[in-house]
Amino acid sequence: MLTIALPKGRIAKETLDIFEKIFQERFEFENRKLILNKGNFKFLLVRNQDVPIYVYHQAADLGVVGLDVLREKELNLIELLDLKIGKCRVCVGMKNEDELDLNRPEIKVATKMVNIAKKHFSKKAMAVEVVKLYGSIELAPLVGLCDAIVDIVETGNTMKENGLKVVETIMHSSAHLIANQNSFISKKSEILDLYFKIESVLRK
Ligand code: PRP
Image 1 (cartoon, rainbow, N blue to C red):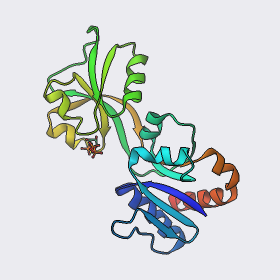
Image 2: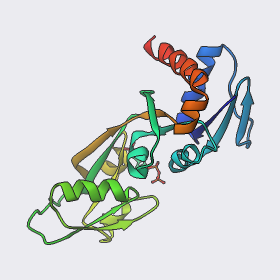
Image 3: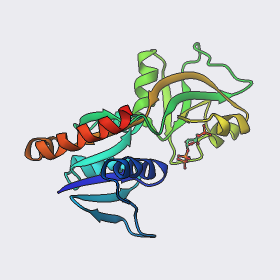
Image 4: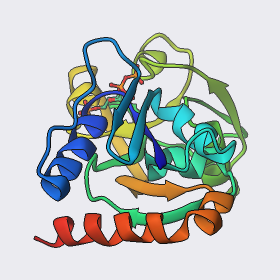
């Protein structure tokens, strides 16, 4: 039996589509249920940022989560496979009319991804004050809460519609299959069996 944490939304759906292709059966959560038991699998529906936590604490053996979330959480997990879904970038954004002023003693950056943002600017030897927000990050520079944001860009529409531009791409992200360190030892054959099945569907 393998327990797999999935992030609510499109990635959960697209991951279950992969399972449907492998097993030629329907894998679907019933309306508001957060657990789906099917064959040898128990799927858990959790918040995106919580997937690494469920897997780290071994409440789930496996998980599917964006590389951006993995890098932000910095937990000791096994990264098994790039599922090539949920592709996006983590970018620095600013108002269209603004430029990154490297001479400023400190810039204010709003983001949900505090660690990624801090690391990025420290690599550039720029002093930043990071303001942690939980969503609607694009609003922050428009009302003077920050000079720049670090946020996810998928289509680019949210930034565009709000008069913001991408000034730098920090990293590319896509959903990855991750494993708990202990599960990977105790359930190695089950996990590898699934790994190869998923890999062969992705190759088609
Ligand atoms: C993400 C991100 C951007 C938006 C980017 O937000 O924070 O706001 O998607 O997508 P786009 O480039 O296709 O416009 P999400 O939908 O996860 O909502 P949140 O702000 O509540 O986290």
